[in-house]
View (tube, one colour):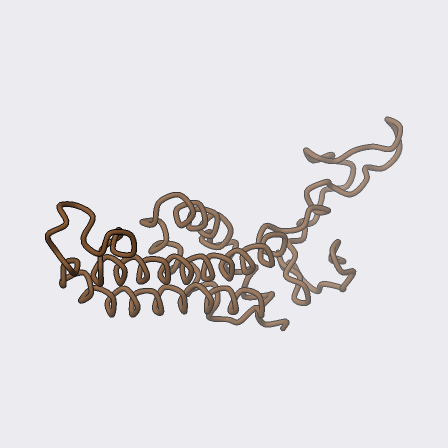
Length: 193
């Protein structure tokens, strides 16, 4: 049997190519036509099944998934910096402090609530952790590290709780990497690199 993706000879009845990780079709019965097969002009021997010519899910989506996790890490870093700036400005002089010299709601405070300044270190630590996790997942997927799939699944479950972008990225990551077949495919790709 020959791998339809890279042309490597495959010994035995393996379901995945040991070189590129592509799924290969099993042996076919002579003369039987499986769904997805076509015949040339209605007669003659069946051509290759269309399923075997399609690139496997993990191989097809892994690069995009790694890039999206890196972009998501940058997005989380920018959001965290904006949050720290917001808290710092609110605790120093208030939002109207540069215009009228005091807190904009009532004008009684020279400084905003002090407890807002106490939140800045916590926001900074949280930002570093979530940004680092997202960038580490992106690196692990882009470089095909063996631990990349496991870390991506954990990060995807955590990202599900972050509305809109985090939820979408978490669902996409789990769709690509969570099935058992994806695990075998990722392991074949990770062993190769």
